[in-house]
Length: 154
Image (tube, rainbow, N blue to C red):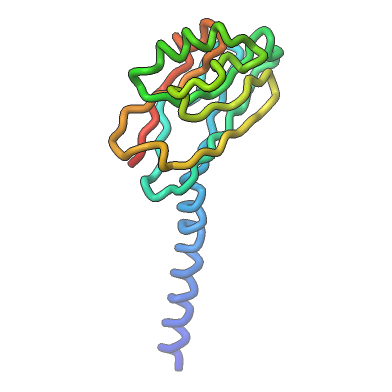
């Protein structure tokens, strides 16, 4: 009987240890990134598993300045389209979150936020291919020079 109790306890412990890992795996499709008043993201690279069906990116603005002065967004593009999306976004203005309306080069984007705010975007993972070359950036004028990174599907 003692042997059976030991096996049951071991099985329960194993289940308890693997359950949080399974919960964490479900969150692997939800990413967080933070921008600040020094025009920096806290991450230079983001990645998701190829098993994700949908991807959610939440942008936090850790600064204090308003969106009109130091707003940030998060924009996902094919890497070769980065400069063209930046240029098109400048003409779109703050009213359009510095993203040209109907710009097919933009795969996903958040709205522009100011200090203390957060925003999220959820998009289908089917927009991305494993091994594809993707970049993310802030399209607020002048920010993309410092606020950009790589996005990978593993």
